[in-house]
Amino acid sequence: MKKNMRENKITEGVIWKQLLFFFFPLLLGTFFQQLYNTVDAVIVGRFVGKEALAAVGGAAAMIVNLFVGFFMGVSTGATVTISQFYGGGGKKQVREAIHTAIAVSIAAGAVIMAIGLIWAPAALEWMNTPIETMADSVIYIRIYFCGMIGNLIYNMGAGILRAMGDSRRPLYFLIASCLVNIVLDIFFVIVLGLGVLGVGLATILSQLFSAVLVCVSLGRLEEDMRLRLREIRFQGWVVKRIISIGLPAGAQTLTYSLSNMIVQADVNYFGTATVAAWTAYSKIDSVFWMVISSFGIAVTTFVGQNYGAGLYKRVRSGVHQCLFMTVIAALAISGVLLPAGKFLLGLFTKDQEVIVIGIEMMRFLVPFYITYVCVEIFSGALRGMGDALIPMLLSFGGICVLRSGWLLAAVPVWNNMKTVMFSYPLTWIVTSVLFVIYYRIYVRRHKIA
Image (cartoon, rainbow, N blue to C red; front, side, top):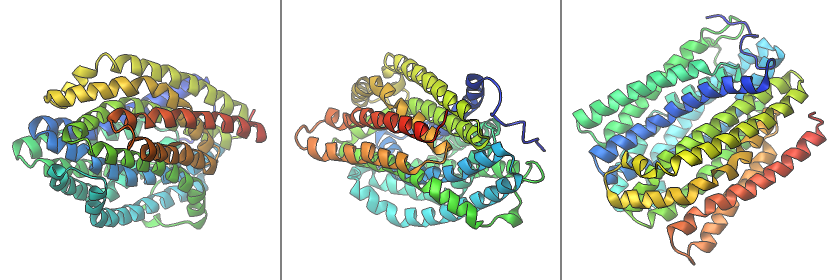
């Protein structure tokens, strides 16, 4: 379907409405993205057992997130480039960026697949994966990495569409692939009894389905920008721009994943019940992260298009309005999750020990959600303006270094889960303060007013 470039621009209209019109499809899309792993966790937790739940959602999930999260960060270099040129009306640059971005996702998918297949078992051992879950964890992670090319093509393609202001079609594709995943989960796990193997197969097949849908959609863009297989290649200027913006953003995401892996290694010391509770809590916790990441993507695209069009006053106003809406959302989520903790944990497991531990985790961490908001919104806004290096350094120092230092210094002294969990609010607060200071300096220095 041909589209006029003006249709998806977010450089005009009431700012908060434009942000919300873009945000809600993103939120629903992120919801269905999370539903992939959540459905897997629910099915294996209730129909296979807590060992399988720990295998699917413990160290294996952390390792997958390490690679996929890094690529998603790198891919922001492509989406920021596309959003800026799309906002400025550069069709030729948009077309070249699209084809290079898809080439990057194919190459990265092949490399990550090879690394994951070889390195995954050693990584699981390094993270102190409980012996009773090791075999299932290896099976799940190797199958997941076999589908990495399809996974990355979908994520890159969806990012391209969002960069052009289209957050609806990625949502439709996720809904369709999520339904496929649910059906295949039921068939492979409940009907055929394949356990963790079935969960992995269902996930990669449904992700391949979504990759096909997004490629077809890119192939139906306006004539001057549409994806053509014969034009998929590396354009030097695009690769350079992706690296300059995306590599620091990928490194920033990597710091989160690495710090979470270190946390997971400490959690694994407390036994299978604690690992299962942490897995179940993480699925519930994803409600907050999918909301805040949707606001982050929305503000990045909004800032990218308006910055590319030279609308600096609109850029700054958009950041402030998005920050306010995100604060309200964080408070609302905390207010809903706390009283519903027991019910939500019961969706994942019938084991009462796991539920009790999970409730303690929720009561400790959920009230601190609001302390992370500034990190997401200001880093997204800065990336939209093309500044990714300093946000990466702030995140590395405030999240990875500080969290790792706390875990290394404090856990041996106070060896309990609360000490481990405190590493999150500690680093959220410190990093938020750093981002507030740097953002104010940046907008003054670059006269974004």
